[in-house]
Length: 64
Image (tube, rainbow, N blue to C red; front, top):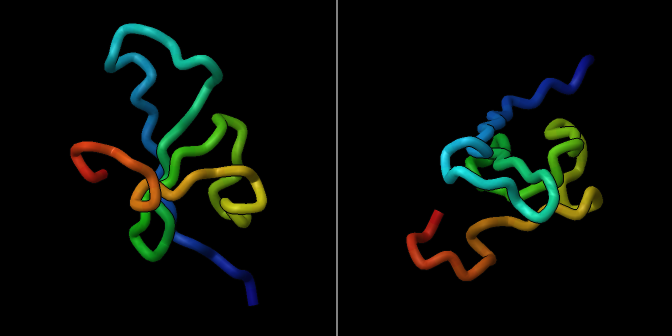
């Protein structure tokens, strides 16, 4: 059976008017957690092993 995960990828690059130090993207996993990842990250693979950061474990003042 094929393992299909529902993930959402949002690109906010143009929203703030400047590019990040390296290309990043926001990914929401199938459990609903938000992740900050490098742009070439495959959202269907293990996000921790690809070097992503889980947003609820980071100090965001607005609490993503």
